[in-house]
Length: 100
Image (cartoon, rainbow, N blue to C red; front, side):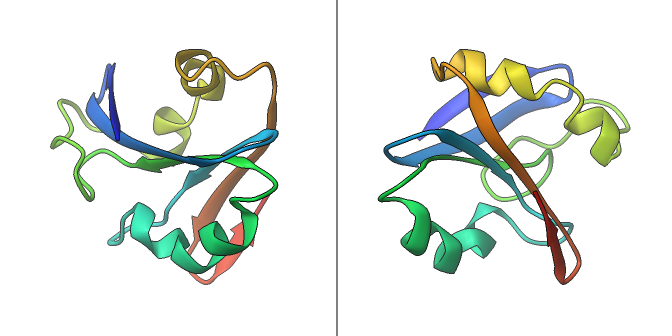
């Protein structure tokens, strides 16, 4: 488990698997645990970077107002922190839908 200091507060980040990096960002009212089933399927082919958003899971309460756009504006910040050569996928859940 890792922590990243951001303008929104300290975010809790889990890293699992090996391969091209994929950042997984959960929806509202849940945390990175919501990716459990997908994590089990992808960990052998992707390096998964699972972020608990501000005020969710083990991340700190946000230090300022934010929205999904504000929170995910700099995905390269996460890939740089975890020394990923390239970020292959950025997945975000929005309710029952998943985009990538």
